[in-house]
Amino acid sequence: MHDLLILGAGPAGLTAGIYGARGGLDTVIVEQKSFGGQASITPEIENFPGIQNIDGFTLTYNMQEQAKALGVSFVYDQVEAVVLEEEIKSVTTKNNGVIEAKTIIIACGAEARRLGVEGEIELIGKGVSYCATCDGRFFKNKPVAVVGGGNTAVEDALYLGNFASEVHLIHRRDTLRASKVLNDKLLSSNVKILWDSVVEGFEGNPLERLHIKNLKTNEMTSIDVSCLFVAVGQDPASSLFLDKLDNENGYILADENMATNIPGVFVAGDIRKTPLRQIITACADGAIAAESAIKYLM
Image (cartoon, rainbow, N blue to C red; front, side, top):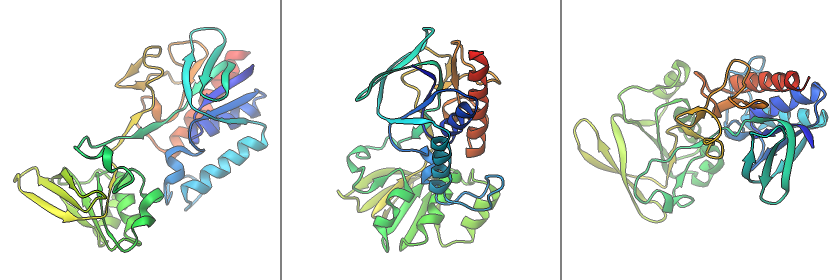
């Protein structure tokens, strides 16, 4: 029996663990994959206060080590079921059985969104990737493409430009949604931008060529690439909770204290409905959620 069970070891979950442990709670974090979440695969972070420049792996590794030093325990396993409505909360894991706690913080984050183009799933690992920093170096001196128009897509394109022979950025609109700093960097780089365009099809297995459609002219073109990196947003990893917690389009609703509609259940980070999804806001969510759990147990 724990005081606090945290689902997810991204910045929100790790910060919640730090604050929970510092508040005297017996705290356990359950994570399906590895620590850090999406932040851990970000090549360059320049907007975390007090740190001018750092890679995401180092930042989240430091968070995890801080949590461990405070006594937070970690379980790396897949959660298959949850019980939230009872006074004692619990999760059933694939390999570690049932873990119980008096309070729970859901910080499972979000998962990469797919394009939904025929052949996409079959090419995962064979020329379709959702993580440029994970797989980019496999395509050194080869042509690649990125699809998307937000910060992640632009960051990926700039990162890939360090070693790919050619980088195309495919965006369905005629302006980017990325920050001005990233936008300026991109426009002064060698990345080739295909405006008003979408991916219509794949050729080759492994991938050899993309078929592109211009949405304004309906013109079809093809570009030779060895990999397509998809960066078109994320979907909340909330499927286990949707029949239990109030949500909007899968994003869990919470008040300013990170409290959900079930007493003792809190939420933090990208999985909740929030106007901004950044590392700093995830950390703030985690801190607030942990403090709320502490007060709930008083």
